[in-house]
Amino acid sequence: MKRTYLSIPSKAVGRPLEMLVFGHRGKPLLVFPSSSGRFFDFENFAMIETIGPFIHDGKVQVYCVDGLDHESWFANAHPADKARRANDYDWAITHDVVPFIIEDGHPGAGIAVTGVSFGAYHSANFFLRHPDLFDIALCMSGNYSISFAVGDFRNDDVFYNDPLMYLPGLQDPWYLDNLRRDLLIMCAGQGPWEEWNGEAAAVSAHLNAKNVPHLFDLWGPDVAHDWPWWKRMIVHFLGKLDRAGFLTNNGRLTRLDVTGFLNNYPHL
Image 1 (cartoon, rainbow, N blue to C red):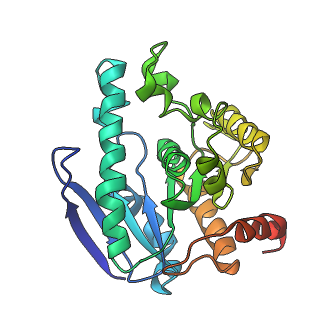
Image 2: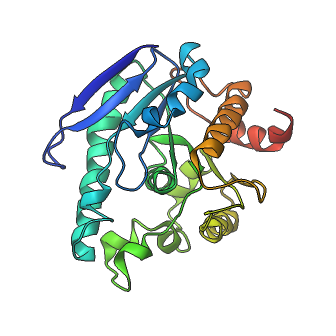
Image 3: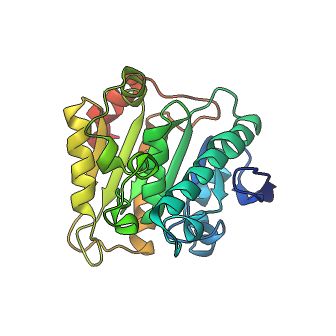
C-alpha cells in the first residue's frame, strides 16, 4: 500500500498541518481524528488495515489530517477563543487541505469525510457547512453539538459551528439545494458508552423537516462506542457505497444518486 507523509502549509493555523495519505487513486476520503487526536490515529488503531482492500483496489484514497481540538473546543480558553480557533481550522481545511486533495488527482471530485466520536462531529459539521466541497459524510458514533465546550456562551462563531443550533433555522436555498444532492450517514450503536444518539436523532429530525435526504442507522444494544465496532461500520458502509458505484476517482454525487442509494440501501 502506498503511504505518504505530508505537511500542508497553513497561514490560518500558523503552522503546517501534518497528514498521512494512503493509496494511489479512488474516492478521496478525508479522515478527521477524534477529540484531541492526531493524524496517525486511524493507522494506529488499525482502521487503515481494516479498509486496506478498498485502498489496494483503488476504491478510496485516504487523507488522514491532523486535528486542532486541543487548541479549540478542548482548550483551556474562553469559549470565544475556542470558536475563533475552530474557524482557523475550518479555513485551513477548506482553503489548504481541500485544494491539495483536488489537485492530487481528483479534479471535479466531491470529497468524502469520515471520523469516529468527535471526529464524526467534525465530519458532519464540515459536510453541513460546506456542501459544495464534501458530498459524502460517514459519521460513526458522533456527537453533534459543541455546547459541552462553551457552556451558556453564544456568539456567531459558536452558533455556526453547532449543527443543533444552525440547522433549525437553515433556509438558504444554496445550502439546502447542495445538501439535497449529498449523502450524510450517521451510524451508532446502542451499547456501552454510546451517549449521543439523542443528538444524532435531533440532527436527523431537522434534516427531515427540510427534506434533506440522509441515513440515520442505529445498530443494536451490543454495539459499543469502540474501535472494533467502528471497523465493522466503516467496512459495511464502504461496501454499500462501492456497490452503488460511488467510489470513483473524480465522481460527485447527484440528487438522483442519493435518492437511489437510500431507496436501495437494504439490498446493496
